[in-house]
Image (cartoon, rainbow, N blue to C red; front, side, top):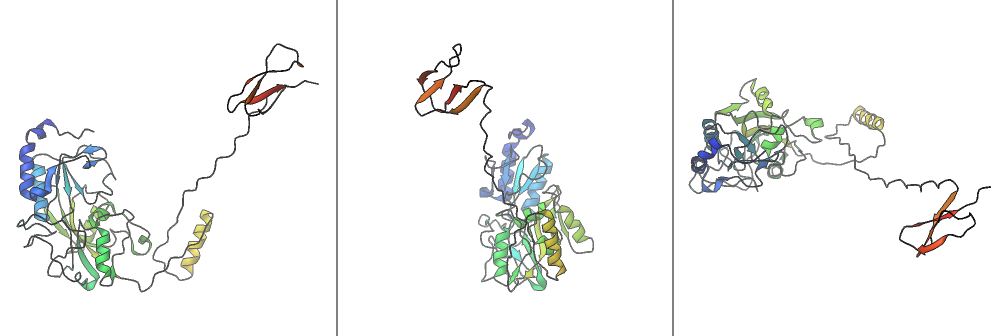
Length: 350
């Protein structure tokens, strides 16, 4: 699929670029580069909105010009799911970052998570709020009631590092390195901890997301809220752009241990897991590791000798060739040997 824009879009590309710069700031809207592609299809523009309001404006601009939008966090799963027919605007969620308690005073940027907006833009967090940059303090807000709200563009590793300083963690261990919380939820990507705590969608308590026409929707306030929020988990951004998620934080375990045991058959795996669970143990995770083992190739036997002939390795530097037409007792003529030649000698039948 070509990365160029259709002619109808190309004619108004200058106006679209100008509007994206007005919405996101001069440093956060640009034409797409070689790294801004999905399944081999290059995007037209990259927009990095600083808050939910700016992201909604980008979506409304795209709807007005019939442009497609693909959200992107860290890009670790950008090629997952069905490939879009075209990608006009890549909406980067990297500035929709931060951590707070739902009843807390404000958002706190986590290390490595936020990319602050231009000075005076007032757009640098996942919600509309005054100020141009994330406020930092000696620690993150205490997750009162074991609940935290996290900006979609916050790297999961940064969230875990920030929560661990206060004795909490998220029971999420997505294997994609550098993945954002929004990307983990959009793909519903789970690791071994899902055995005890469920998938990311199972742990979701609330969600703020934007529809295709830029409407901000908040779920989780009523009985149907979590169920509606889970519909977006695994949709890969096809149903909306995630802005922030409310998740349950859990206390850090006082001790952790990893136990490794070799197994040889699938039946042994089944019996081992059954024995562990039957013993009353409650492992947080069970993972089956299947390392790739390369076996050396089997030796190739030499080809069978033709009837009436014996084959043996020639001496270095000499090649023995059978010259047909003479009597069986006639000696073979010798010629200079070549590498990897074999010696062929006639044998007399009896």
